[in-house]
Image 1 (cartoon, one colour):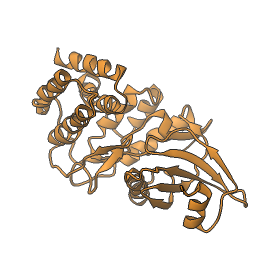
Image 2 (image 1 turned 120 degrees about the vertical axis):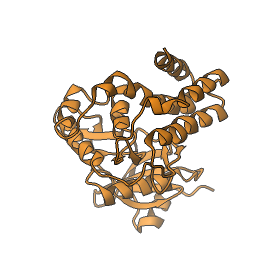
Image 3 (image 1 turned 180 degrees about the vertical axis):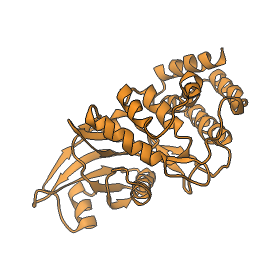
Image 4 (image 1 turned 180 degrees about the horizontal axis):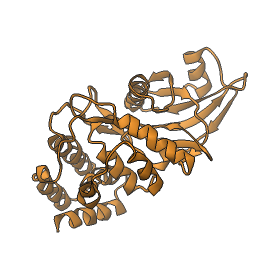
Length: 285
């Protein structure tokens, strides 16, 4: 018989929640808010399958807490089946002052430098494995551990047609002509869409569900553009500390966004396959 959420929490924290609320989100597991007798709250993610995704997510949040000032939930208890975190509150998305704060916080995150591209452990994005073996070449890292690795996952699950897989591999062969080494690599959140940002009307509260590694920070900006996470105001503030090159706008952001589109193909298939094909077609022209 499955152990109740109340019992799992009590075993981990030596206190039992009095009320449990469902929350939105959670590719890796169900997300709920826990309220206790003293009116304090925590957030719990659950994964009955115990795929290891929650352990990785907890490790990513801890890494950000230890290596950056980015506001993220603090890990309270963690294993493969359960992640209990502090409750940031708020609602998804950030506008106005919130996105000004987000621009400054992400610019500061991107200023944290690594010696190599990647990370000392593999991470997750949307529950999918994100390989992070260290590399001294950004084009090679992006080609092998982002484009080709995710294309293989998409093909293996049956969502990526063979013809489109071949096109991605052909494009990746010449990736050195598309990308340059930013040198040194910067730390990125890796999954900055509106659902992973929590805010009040005039205050950013924090970021959740990271997919971290050391990269060219342009890949984070490309992702933000693709999903319209922020308005132009975000980029105006970001430019106060980081230059955004014209050739990024013209070409590189579209190269980078092959990766999140592949992630969506792997997770959801459907219309994302055509979107990926059309996106790649514009780069092939």
